[in-house]
Length: 137
Image 1: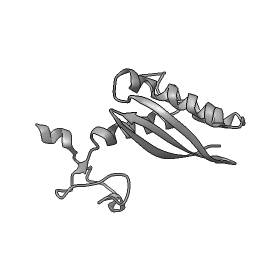
Image 2: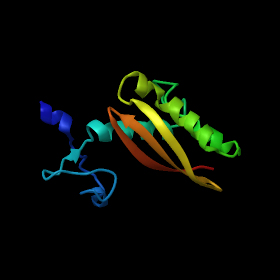
Image 3: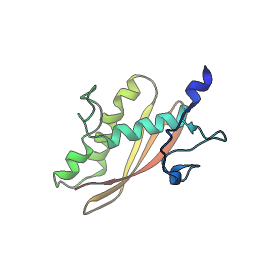
């Protein structure tokens, strides 16, 4: 039964370019798709919350962030505004204990329709930094 939670069968009609870490997922030696666990799972959840538009999920209208709507408004993004947007998006994960804190958010670059930023969070007692690139219209 534990194997059920470790891998998910790939569908028969799969683009071969996506296999073996060359695309969207990794496969193991038996050609099953690997799922992420522990720290990687938390980082993926943080990314999904930040990069999903708030209200875009059918079952949770509070899920996501206001990042895209802010960027599309034409207002200049600052590090402090970005910190607030990221903190609000990650807050439910702090409440449920998966994330200890959002420590720092750095705006690395903002051009016409692209923003690049870095987010540092503490998970347990380990600080982890992850970069994000957002393209918007």
